[in-house]
Length: 197
Image (cartoon, rainbow, N blue to C red):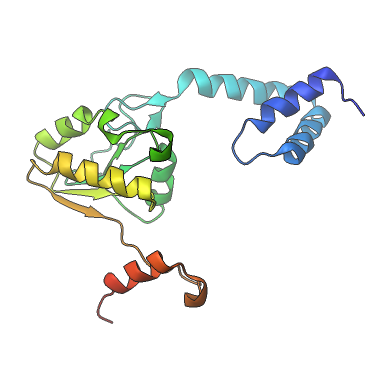
């Protein structure tokens, strides 16, 4: 059965979103079709508004609608700690831990298999922050993948000329996980990073 062309188009557009397959896109499209016109208009306005008004902070790269972003402009944030993340969405996760330092967002994930080269990364904004002399520790909070490891090493080398401590997130076993089902690399890193009880 062929669907009306506007509905097919909406399904096609929804499938372009991450983790949305054909069935989920179809369910969402049919749901949107049943919404009152005002709610559909609000959704459309929100999509256009976010595209036009949200941009990376000029200091840290976090997504914001004001420059500098609320984190950079907050005087209560600790300036001696700088957490480097791949995407602005990573900040949301780290904020839930109670971290109260500053951030630097790469706004790019590197896929070395796709010929991404960390040397293409513009590290000058990061080095400008470090040149201010306030940062004492840089926390590399990149994804625990081979790509994240390569980028972390590249950044650590770029930072090495500054008098700062470079750390990275610890690796280990997840709470509630079973050792039996843990991969070898994670288990090895958990053993290497063990602490006194």
